[in-house]
Length: 159
Image 1 (cartoon, rainbow, N blue to C red):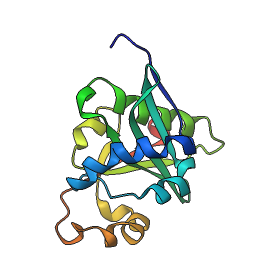
Image 2 (spheres, rainbow, N blue to C red; image 1 turned 90 degrees about the vertical axis):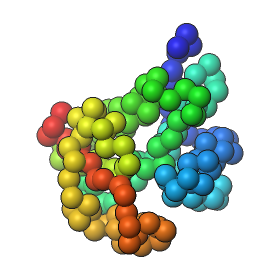
Image 3 (tube, rainbow, N blue to C red; image 1 turned 120 degrees about the vertical axis):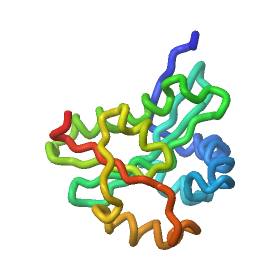
């Protein structure tokens, strides 16, 4: 990539582009569908990746309490996948958590691509470790009874 990749906190002005990035993945049941209003309500959880000022990826980190965070809504424009955009977003979240006052945080994801997260230092774990996630989101998912996602976890003490 010739132009500089930049990850930054999302703003309300980014909502239409975030929504446009998420929709094709929601159609394929890779991420949960998010309305523009929902994205706006949780804009503080979102970051965007830009190349040359154009948004090319996004992700959110949801705080479940007790120092537990989830990487969610992580998508990259299909035309530039495997170029480090997703990695940069996840590393942004880890860096931000490392700068926080807590030294015992945990960051997890439910994913169909556990290898991507494992390459970033996550470990595969059992989904049952995250009842907060199951009660908050999984019950609403069309794949609840036939989930094909793996759980991965990165802990502060793994740094």
